[in-house]
Length: 373
Ligand SMILES: [Zn+2]
Ligand SMILES: [Zn+2]
Image (cartoon, rainbow, N blue to C red; front, side, top):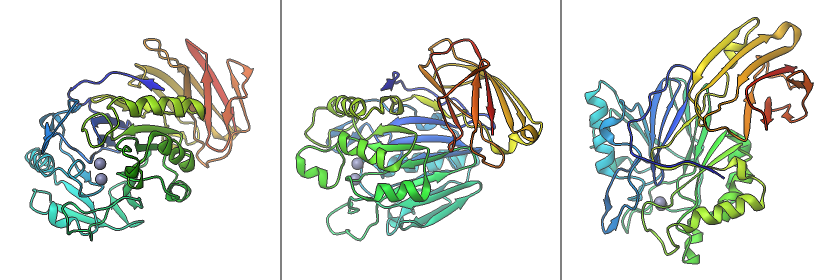
């Protein structure tokens, strides 16, 4: 598994065409994509009643830009934290925003007085469109009651799809057969999956163990998984450092270690790798230098010659913190499958024709990749 260290810092602001995901901690994320700022289950609390937070949140509310859209997966206190949501809504308004919040069915009453401009309730598989973004509520195996007698409240996860990326936040859930359907219907590229609160064993009726989460990830068929819901609050009996250890073992066993990305609080994951389809029209040339990536700044040039069924890329492999593998996604305007690939003028076999992905392994310096469609 790949890992870097966390810290509290100001989020780095994404530029046009860039997507960045910042880990707030626990199940909280801040996403910048398609020009929108999105928060998911944001919780900045130092204490949840008697539970002291064990790790600092990765960002502070006052350092966030105006948040356009907030998604809350269910009414449990570690996910729907009213003081965090109120602080975020008010800060967003002061910065000129009109913050919208999306919650499951029958959860509106818990957030309607917090300063959001609009509250949207979604049932499973219902959609909400916000500019270029589409939010789809997804099923889960969990429960929604915040106190004792409010079992009517909905719960679940969300798939968020924009022009640049798609992301699945599972909320809280046990392993269930719904992951396969979520993968089939919505095919999210990045899966944020909970791995903590599985001990005592009865908790696995409502939460996933790391092994369950790996199975869920395999069911989804997503390229990348980011684990969450561990390390911040002592919600259960397992040692705080156990979920990541078990996840590493399971990921190795299933040979998906490279697809599991462990973020620490304050980490930014830059998803600038996907090239917007619209840019790859006939004769288009893209030159990007110093694009921030997870591995340090990267530079690349992409030349699209669709008439001759070719896309050529020159990629400078980041040197500061060299990745073992670079995934290059060269999307044909008509989504045509890749026929063949050459890397530095030699035939290259490591590519996925349908997903238009080329895997560059063990390379350094400037690499030329030529893809024929
Ligand atoms: Zn929960
Ligand atoms: Zn939870």
